Image (cartoon, rainbow, N blue to C red; front, top):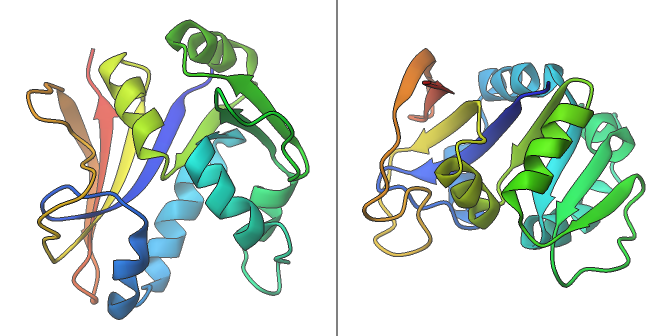
Amino acid sequence: MGAIAVHEFMSLDGVVDAPTWTAEYGFDPRMGEAIASAMAACNAILLGRTTYAMFEPAWSNRTVEDDPGAPFFNDTTKYVVSGTLTDPTWQNSTVIGAYDRETIRRLKDEVDGGLYVSGSPTLVRAMLADGLVDDLHLFVYPLTRGGGPRLFPENSTLKLSLATSEAYDNGVAYLHYRAVG
């Protein structure tokens, strides 16, 4: 049985919208090492429709010379959770239908190795509520956004165990949590 590893960029107040606001902080190379470590145990990618639509044009033409993560994103099997996308154009992509926790559970059982999720906050919130996320890799930026979609909705309860933490020179804190129970 595989595990689901989620990677999110978020503000101090929990906002996880498109992370264009992270650019002013730069990207510490150690952040890339932490993300690579989260991806290392994963043999497939799981994405929501909106993140897939953002990633496909951003990653599909990148090479390893452009970004060391390009081969992982382009060559790895991608499963897209969507009730509207029917014909994905990015290589190695399969639409698995609208969110259904049993479909995701079966996918965890069937995929040899873990499933990596980046962004996809709607999908991640549903999987957190259904107890499907095994590892949560949060990169918390030192600002508040005030409004926007949050990773943890109001009244949600979740118990996690801190596995790793690190602070970067750009002010970002990396928090790796594991599911408890």
